[in-house]
Length: 357
Image (cartoon, rainbow, N blue to C red; front, top):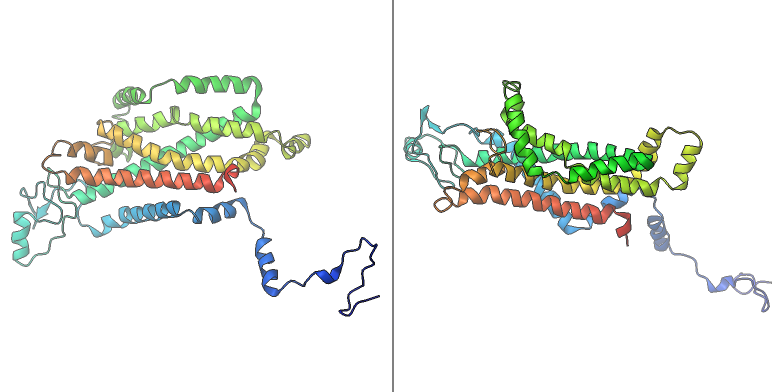
């Protein structure tokens, strides 16, 4: 039997659901269900949550602006980082320690005669070189060092941690004891010792090459990163793998005879992706800060190639008379390190499964 609406009539003693008490879904509710049930991936889900973090997005914008400046500024500014300012082919000895957006006596005289001179945005240094372009090249060096050092840490740390975590047993025990020994080595002392050793052995070998511009001090810094700074990444990856390798899908892959390298590559490392991304993002500001304070101590890039740390060190002598020369490189270091740290925190909140609400 049916009721007036055409629905089947429910018997009083029946467990059947009374259909008449339900309403049909509206079109808007159907569309909402389609959105809610839309399939996604780990990366897409993480990026969606990252976009909701205002501090992380501001950090990305700041880093993009810095990248645009260091890429396109040398194409616009007619000065070179090691070039002493000249006016009409004559060296300008009066362009020493100029304030931002000011001209020397020779430049002003040349302008009065109808000539054109590109302004010194950050002024000049004690050797009559444009300070803005030196800060730009110093930022280039610091960012390149940070990115390259992070790649070294990523590759060595992931490989070492993957082998130790997956192999387990005595292999893991021996490899982790090596990590404990490396943790006990003082990194600053190692940089100084390697700078002396590599300066004596590689000084002649790198002459006339691209590496000569960086100098043996920077090469020693890369060697120190390859020797010391990967241990944190290795421990994190090992800890993740020790948990993941006990999952059923990993045991099933072992049962069908899948090689260990393929299991690590296709099943284990993708599940460690959140830890790897977060650690790499946080390693970049650490490497930049390390390079900056080593350059501040005189263990950085080779003169006249600037870095943010060496610029801050050279500005220290005239801090009372020319404080702006310290402000520009120091502010750039702060912006880069703070932006990467905030971005790393945002990536951790977005990609760490344990922090999902």
